[in-house]
Amino acid sequence: MNERRAQRHPGRGFHTITLGCKLNQFDTAAIEGELLRRGLTPEPDLSRASVVVVNTCTVTGKADAEARKRIRGVRRQNSGCRLIVTGCYAELDPEAISSIAGVDVVCGHRDRGRLSRALDELSVGPPGGDRGCDASFDLPPALHFGDRSRAFLKVQEGCRLACSYCIIPTVRGPSRSVPPEAVERDALALFRSGYREIVLTGVNVGDYGRDLEPRTSLAALLRRLLAVSGPQRIRLNSLEPLTVTDEIIELMAADDRLAPHLQVPLQSGSPSVLRDMRRNYRLEQYLERVQRVRAAVPHVGLGADVIVGFPGETDERFRETYDFIASSPLNYLHVFAWSPRPGTPAAARPDRVHGTAVRSRSAALRRLAGRLGFRFRSRFEGRRLDAIVLAPREDGRLRALTGNFIEVAVRSGSATRRQPVRVRISRVTPCDTLGVVDGTPEWASAT
Image 1 (cartoon, helix red, strand yellow):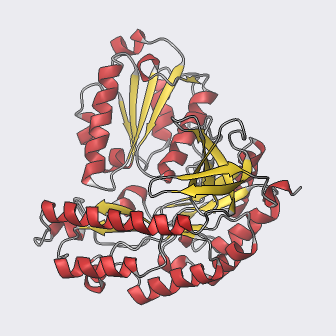
Image 2: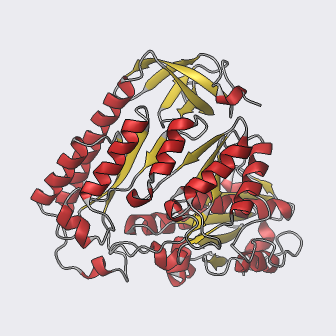
């Protein structure tokens, strides 16, 4: 610990930076809850914070580089803060982070109690012991999402799959589920705090309940939450294809409080690349599942993760991916360029794709995603959709997120943040969706 730096900012403000996925956003909320318990307060100005926490991602090499860049940037902007680095990159390569000048503490996932002890060592608030987590499942005693409109709730951690490109099982561990009674307790606490939408998150959420005794399922958890949630909305984030069960689809079709939105990772539309990735499904199975969702819930928002440039991806194999997506029910994509993760089987392959081809293919998929999204959004012009009001835009309008994952710009003054509304889509362009507030969702009026 650098005592000189620690003394330079004797204030009680903290600032957090979250990189990566929604699961990291949950983990940051847990850290913020612990800092609040210790008497610190949020400080939006990074340069004035006495404690700065950077929660890192390591899903790609680009994510590692971004983490290093942000850590160095923190120290340049704030020479006197206590700088704590946590998250997946901190778990994977703590030595690389420790070598960055000015980092006070590196804390990975495997020892969450280390964060509480580090705060004690840095004299951050009263001694906390191991109160920063629940030893049974790394669960925090409190969550803090600030002024965010939506809250994230971790229901599952880790992964039992063995995809050849993925390092996440190494840094997050095996799949394990939060007991349903704990999920219900924390969901109700978030609803009582004013959040009208909770996003259930995890590494492989569809795996929920397989490890519990008695064994249960994600569908059973959803039924339990919907039974007690009242006029609030629950959203699933990402489900692996084989975990999109008929039960979940039927629940989504039957209850408007379960947001009609699913992200189903595809990764590749080439059968040979999919096999090399060691994914646990065939393209026929993937297509059957997303078609089943679209048929049962016609207005559902359907997205996919796609990896471009996996070793051995020829022009022909990329064209298979492109054509598969173009003819599928998907309406948005998250496109990632493959990067070698040390320790994974794919990292040792010699048949890598040239960077120029990766950039060209990525751009082609993003253009396709733009067309698919515009076509999907255009279906709703003149129609009303349920939404949750988010933050203001730079143009003065408010952002509202529909159940099927369309971001709509509505005029400010007609709604307030976190408020459930019905929006009428007035205009759709390739780059934007405009609407007006036109009532309240039926589910939000229930008691």
